[in-house]
Length: 322
Image (cartoon, rainbow, N blue to C red; front, side):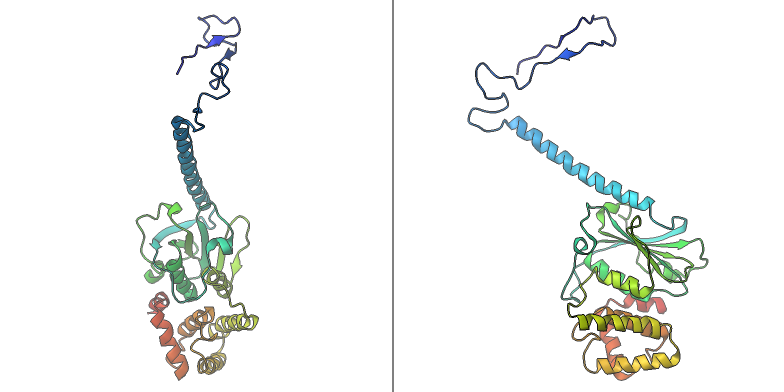
C-alpha cells in the first residue's frame, strides 16, 4: 500500500504547536490509472478480505453494544424500582426448567407485554405479611417453569418482625443474581404495610394493579391465554372472584355455600372450568387452604385438593401455612 504524505494547504510553520490551517489528505479510494475499480475491490468483483474482516469486526462490536444496552436498561430499571426505601434484601433466585405441561396453550412475553430489547421486565408486588398472597406463590412457581425468573424478597421499613418462612418464600439466593441481563422476568415481593396487595409493572407508564385477584389474572396471562369461549372465560373469572371475596373474606355461612358449589361443580368435571386446569383452580385451592376449610370440605372437594397437590405447583403455598 503506498504511503501518503500530509501536505498543509496554508502557511503553517513546523514550530507552531497548534496550527490553525487545514490539511488535505489524498482520497484512499483514489483510482489507479484510468481504471474505474476502487482499490479495495478485486478485478473479479469480490470484496477485499481486509474489508470483509472489518465488516465482521463491526458486526461483533454492534452485538456487544446491544448486550451492553440491555444491561444498562436493566440497571436503569433497578434505579426506578418503586419502594426503594427497603431495609433488607433477603433472597434472590433463578429458576429454570422445562415448560409446564399443565397448560395446553402457552404464551410468550413479547406477545403479552410487547417487544422488548432485552432489558429485564420487572414485576414488583407489595403485600401485607398479615395476609400472604398464596395464589401468587403458586403462580410464581409456574412462571419459574416457563421463564428465567430473578426472584427477590424485601422487607419495607413499615413492617417489623416478618416470620422466616415469608422471607424465604421465593426460594434461595442465586449466585448469578447480580447479572440482571441473564433473566427474562424480575419477580420482587416486598412485605409492606398496605391495605391491599399492589403490583407495579412498567413503573414509568403503568398505574398499580390492586387486589390479589387482579394481580393473579395478570400473572396467569403470562403463562397461558384465557379460554377463547366467552362463557368459559366468564366462569373462570366468576370462580376467581368467589374465591377471594367469599372464601377468603366471607362469613362462615358464605364459605359453606361456596364449598357446596365447589363440590357440585367438581362432581361434573375434574377441574372447575371443565377438563383443563385454570386460574379458577389456583384461586379456589389457595383460598380454601387459607380459610382453614380444607379438612371439612365435601368429598369431591377433597379429591380435587389432592389432584391440585399432585401437580406440585402448590407446595410453596402449603409450606407457608405449615
